[in-house]
Amino acid sequence: MSKKILIADDSSVIQTLTKKILITLDYDVMGVKNGNKVMPLIDKHDFDVILMDINLPSVDGVSLTKEIDLWQTRKKQMSLLLLFQVTTKTIRKKILMPLALKIF
Image (cartoon, rainbow, N blue to C red; front, side, top):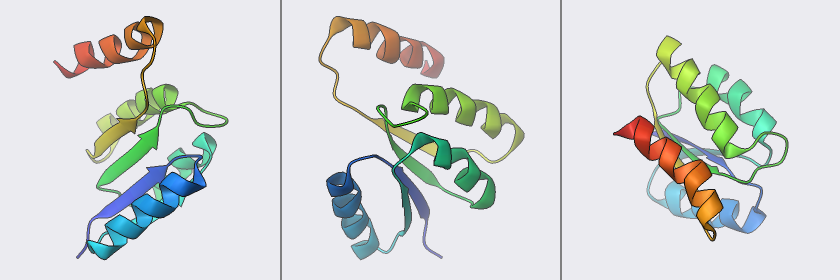
């Protein structure tokens, strides 16, 4: 049985390329372009991994990460990888440090 992966990214190019690579590696892949579609899919499907952009329409990746974290305490644990480009100290302080403190 192949692993299920959810890709949450508003870029069609990134979604298409990532899906093609993962499908050739025999993963079962679904994708969404809007942050508000992530949680309903997580409730319906048993994903093993979520690849998620930080900058999503409707609900951003950081807020979704917090929501998924609360959801996981009630349900199944899954791996979550946030994809983003950090270019300023402000973003690093707001995103990376809180996540690093939670992980370690």
